[in-house]
Length: 160
Ligand SMILES: Cc1cc2nc3c(=O)[nH]c(=O)nc-3n(C[C@H](O)[C@H](O)[C@H](O)COP(=O)(O)O)c2cc1C
Image (cartoon, rainbow, N blue to C red; front, side):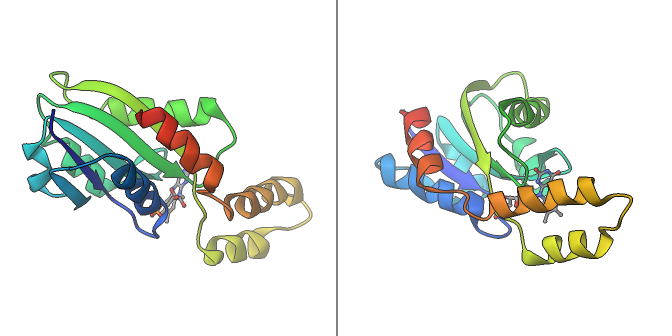
């Protein structure tokens, strides 16, 4: 069984997960950002960041090229703390993957977002929408510590 670890990461969270996978699996054929070189392996560990409830566009383009492989999906999302939310994202990503592939597992955790997102929430928050934006701000602050060591050890468990 040969394998590759390939990812898309805009701000580094998903790359951190890819590094953990790379450290815990020996002799990958390819490790790096999405590239057709990764397609030489039998099994692909494919990482994405969440954009509008599904994987980012670079991962969508990459997934379209994947055929007859074993796939392990891993991703990060700004919102978290809910398995249901993560499952929904994974289902959306799965729907892009061709049927001749076999999905052998998946892992998701929260990932910190840029400070500009919090600044925007603060600007938009007013008396009428106070609660909604406070929830978003609280979520943003929670995300700041992710991916954390607990996420990383859960990822290791998921790939073993
Ligand atoms: C343009 C944009 C859109 C995003 N859309 C979502 C989203 O729909 N749902 C979500 O949970 N997080 C969303 N996020 C947050 C990122 O998925 C999250 O911060 C992720 O960990 C970034 O991963 P990266 O550091 O590997 O790029 C979005 C971030 C950006 C910049």
